[in-house]
Length: 85
Image (tube, rainbow, N blue to C red; front, top):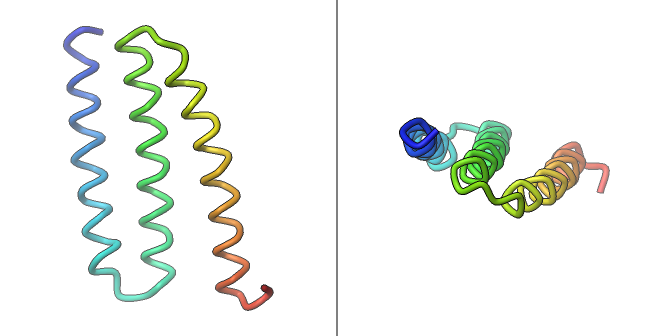
């Protein structure tokens, strides 16, 4: 895990940058929202990998809380886009 961990974190970082390009250049607002949700998912995965690399459970706990907040915010934005709020 010593060599794989930093490689996974770097790969997830590159994927986050690719999604960030989609957020900036996205042709429509739903495309940007999906890209932001993908960034949130990749950040959660990065926190879990960092927790495994450093053998610290607190990173996994933070990832769980962040996942819950990300899910709720995605639902709220989706409802707003539909016009129900």
